[in-house]
Image (cartoon, rainbow, N blue to C red; front, side, top):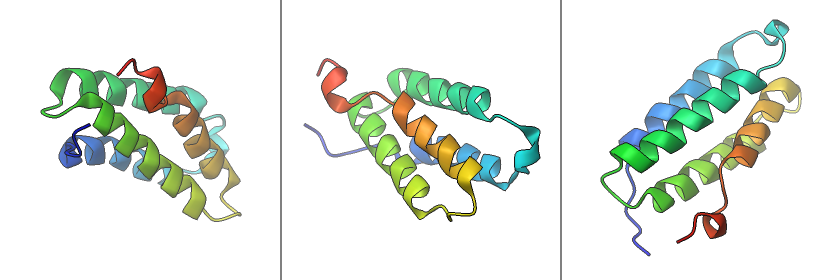
Length: 97
C-alpha cells in the first residue's frame, strides 16, 4: 500500500476540529457538527486526493485519535467530540481495499 498522503487536505479538516475545540461547550451537543466535518473530509479524500484515499483516511483517523488522547481530562466535551469523530472514520479493513 502506498505510504504517501495529502498532508494539506488532511490538515484542512483537522483545523476545523482545532477551531471547534476552541468554542465554548455551552453550545451543547457538537455531534452534528462533528458528523458534518467528518463526512466532508471523507468525501474530499475520495474526490480530491492526489494519493490513495485509504492512506488519507487512515492518517486522518490516527491524527484524530491522537488529538483525543492528548485532550485534557477537564475538556470532556471536546474529547467526546473527537472520539465520536474517530468512530465515524471507517477502519482501513472496511474500505474494501
